[in-house]
Image (tube, rainbow, N blue to C red; front, top):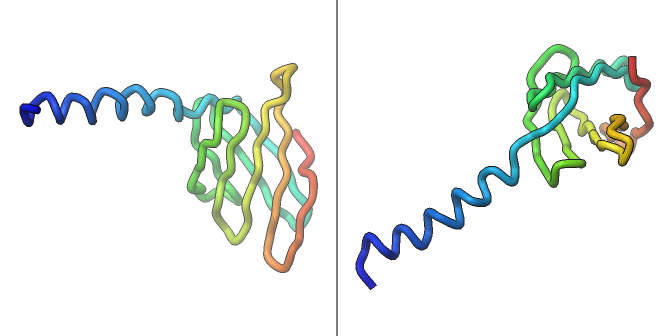
Amino acid sequence: MKPCLRLLGILVPTLACAGATEAKIPLVNATCPGKIEVHADEGGRVYINGKEAKLKVFNENYYEAHGAGVTISLGINPDSSPSVSYTGKGGANGVCTLS
């Protein structure tokens, strides 16, 4: 196989998958137990206590944001409403209140 065709065979599937991981997060503000403040910008950036968190996209309805020693789980329910929970150090966890 010619090198340029081989490269095309690698790039096309990679580019096709790139769009599948795009964050479609709605605007969310939540407060979690332990004074954890969560803000998600519509489209993808998530902040934990004012600092941008590292976002992992599982699918268009479930995301996790890591930062400030906690993991924020953000789910999108079938009615398009968000649900937010957290997991922290020492097994701390709970449901966050949307504001």
